[in-house]
Image (cartoon, rainbow, N blue to C red; front, side, top):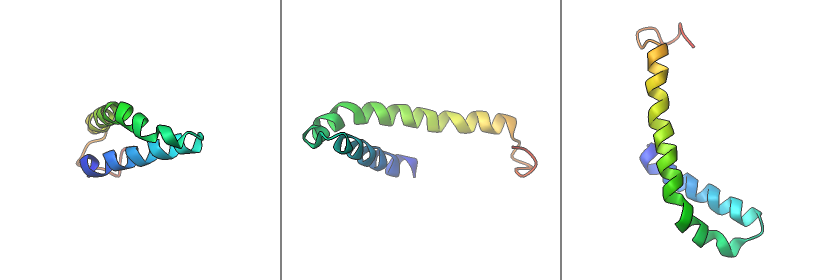
Length: 66
């Protein structure tokens, strides 16, 4: 689901942010400039966090830790 919804939500968030800054004419250039970078970084974080999570929280007893 991260590969499907993440690009959509990042695009919507960036568009809304630029529009609320009062620069709606810059939405398309900002999306072209930054979406790939943001998606790349976001997926790197999303894929890295569970690795550390499962190192400290055993999967046998999910309710006993964290």
